[in-house]
Image (cartoon, rainbow, N blue to C red):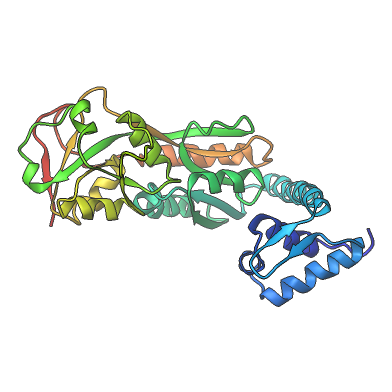
Length: 315
């Protein structure tokens, strides 16, 4: 098609993903009018509308939906050609786009960035924090090179390398510091504070406690682990946090933190990338360097699993 450019395709892909001109413009780092002009040019080149416009939202036409699928495949192939070129260079250099889930990023991202700068000085590291599904979508579409997620990623098109495994810890009000650790049955009857929907850690906590979403049960939610711990400090309920969060969150509120009875819940965090990524060997090297960083280390409460004495933390 004469006149069709990569700019046309990238702008249309952003619009197809966001279904909103403003958000698509932000993704493309251009003004909304500039993006709109490119979409109109693209429709003129094709000779048919790709987008149904209204005052509140946009929809893709049937042709637009099919066109979006082909454009996404083309853009991913072009990105992989670039990755193939980067993989031929030694050492590994160029942009490295990677995502991290919110229950990991605040606690280990500074150490990860420092390690990458030391071991791969030619990389232009571009981190992004987002929820699991968003990161997996961006991986699949080639907008990320890799992501740090809870394993398994459950996608046959992904490769994954474990980085560390950690326990979940129980956070209670400071006044409960000397009380025995509750059993799983007792925990089910407590007011459990959870992250908002979309966080994989929320799903893992609910699975451990054998809780199901129900209109009869009103969960109290927070947008971050910090918010949940602060609510526990205000004696609103109890919550679970991953071990890596303890050194940070345990100092920010008057709370008691204890290990749970065996078998304690755990999660494994790993680096995930597309199987088709030509940089697979380099990403294995990055994963190996992060394993040696021992990201899972923490100052979790002493004593064995199920210890009845909690460690009181706070400022």
